[in-house]
Image (cartoon, rainbow, N blue to C red; front, side, top):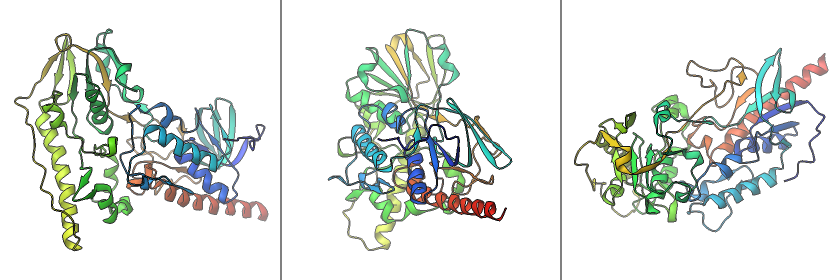
Length: 425
C-alpha cells in the first residue's frame, strides 16, 4: 500500500482518525469521497489485530456474503462459506489497497484533548491538531486476566486468547481453557481436535445453531430483518451492548458448537472458575445452569425462526427442538492442578475498554462513550466500530460501512459550516 501522499511536516488536519483497522479505513474511504483532508494514525500495522491476534484455525462465524466493507463487497466463489484467517487477511489487504489511506503507522496516540474547539492529539511521533477526531481504535483493547492468575505456579504456562495460535504452542500436557464465549468455545474445540486433554471452565455465554430448517441461521435472521434493527428498537435497548456473542463456528464449512458433545468425547467441564486455593482450582457449581442457559438461547432463536416460517408460509424442512445429549453427574467444585496434569491455561474471558487517553468529557459512569450512532455531544468527536453502535453489524464487516457513511455526513456538514464561518470572518 502506498503512503506517499502524506506530508510528514503537516501537523494540522481537518480530521484525524485513530485506528487503522477496518473501521478507520472505512472512515477514510468516505472522507476521501467527500474530499476532506485527514490522517489515519495506527499504533502498529494496518489491520494489525487481524494479523497478530487470531489463532491459526480462526474462521468467520458469519457467512462471507456479509462482508460488505465500503466499495469492497465479498467477491469470492463461496458466499455461503466462512473465510479462514489467511483469506480474511487477503480480503482486508485488498480493501486497504483500494482505500490507500493517508496513514502514519507504528504511531501510538497517547492523549486526545480539546482546547477551545481544536483537538490536540499527542502521539509517539509528535503532536497533531485537528478540527474533528474519529476514534476507531476498537472498543475493548485490553485483555482481561484476573488477579488470581498471579497465584498460578510459574511452571504452568499462561496465555490470553489473543496470544493463542495453536496447540503446538503450548507445553505438552492437559490444558485449562477459562471461558466459553465465542473465543473460548472455539479454542477449546481446536485443542480438543488436536488430541489435547481439555478442561473447560464455562461461563454463561449463549449459543446458536449453525444451520436450522435447511438454511444457515444467519440467512434466516437476515430475512427476518434482525440485522437492520437499530439499537433503540431492541428489547434490551443499549443493554444489548453488554451481551456476550453466541458461540458457533464456521470451521470446516460451519457447524454447531455443543459443549455437551465435547464432554461425551472426554472434555472435562466445570462452572465458573473463581479461585486457586493451594494446589486446587475452585469452581462455582453452576455448570448445569450455564449449559441450560446456552441451550435455551439456542432453542429460543430456532422458535423465532419457526414462527417466521409459519407467518410467511415458507416451505422449509421440519426440524425438532434440541435435546441435551449429556448431563453432568455432579457439580465439581475443586480440581488439583498437579493431579489433573494441567500444564497450560488459556484465558478466554474477554477484553475491557481503555479510554484513559481520551481527555474529553463524553463518558458515562461506566467509562463507556455516550453517543448517538457514534456522534457524541462534544462537537467534532466521534466513535466508530463499537458493538451495537447502531445495529448488530456495527462492529462487524456487515454494518460498519453504513455507520462510517453516517458519521462522514456529519463531519462534512461541520466542515462546511466551519469553512463558511471562516469566510464570513
